[in-house]
Image (cartoon, rainbow over all chains, first blue to last red; front, side, top):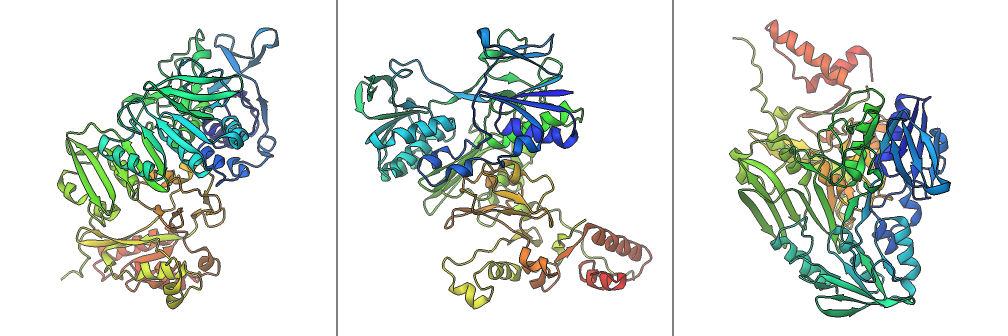
Length: 415
Length: 186
């Protein structure tokens, strides 16, 4: 049996390891557009600011693929799937080759969104911060950079802004919406984040949509946003990420925003599975979503690997969790903000909020202190009715102990 | 199976001796006075929480399918191949707090000073020489017991049988040591 995996990120590697664990003999081929071994994209901003050494990005030893008997086809883009013939096409035109598979895993990830602004695609000095190549591009250019503009204030944008500030660059963050972290926080918490960014020297401009990137062959000179030219020598475009599904058009694999999979990570076509940032599937509350993050990739990759080998395991759903540090201060959220009511506790410059609906937690936001977030997240996932103790939820000392089953009184000797 | 920490919440009297013993064990010279002199002060990895009519020394459960290990994008959350305890390789941890987000028990916390994930490591230096973890050793009521699941199951069976026969029972936790002696085990 031959397993072909498109991708070389956490979902792909988790699946490959799971499959190899179950079957020492099957063929495994991993295809990746990037030419580097498996690395973690999460600390790329820390790599740019030099707090994480390059070697720490690579989470497996150099001998990983050899040790697991994995054949690699790196530096090659998968371009088409012929599900009837069970063949994957790599490359295009005369250089195209085909790879036969018995089971296929699509874990090609997501791409940085590059909005169609004049000058964005072709001016030197414009980068995303999604891949190792992006980070190395920024690093290579840094010596000639005094000022930078970050387009977008999602967590990648804010991480990039901090890294550049720490490198001594004057940073402007422009955000089209009225607040930073619009996907993650409500306006009240976002205002705290904005003031902390400003305290650390970041020029934050909300309600400021990028209109054009100005410059020429020598490099970027400014970003035009909200009618103003913001001079800079570097642009980081952090306008979000999107599943990389364009190449699957015509394959018959059902896609919407991402590749649609069921709770076994199976697509609509037999033998074809998907996992990682590319999938669109139910979250833990049963809503179909695309949520790219590391835990979802690893857990989905594992579930895919098991089901591909005939071990039935069902995924409990994507976790909508976010965590970012704003100049070392942790900020996190999970779930949604569309509760009927919200609980809020402010203490020592920190803020914690929970959204409730029908006596259940449907989301949370935390600024400054994220401890215990996992417990609230689990209460949401399990649909626990917290109505009877909701006034205790955000009180200090609340913990798993509150949820312990009460043992009966100790046994007494029979009279 | 290997030993792990079992908790009998009906015996916990919330004295917080486990918290102090844990902090001391994770201090530079492992003495109370040394721990007080440490800067930053060592932080405990067990927290006594209110549990209705009882109290509960909460800590990492060292889960078999640990959400924190899957969630760590730095490969820093690691399982010891010998003891199966889950610990943080602080050299690799960058303090992204994904582990804090996914632990359903609140067993991992963010250390605001060291900026590293902070959790129970089940005292590898103590268990390597046959000692119980510091919290277990310090517990005056034996609300925590370091034993194998088989040992606990056998004790529960004996307690149930004794109760059914109307015999006064010895509390499970305090009789682990006696049971091990009886069996001639460690």
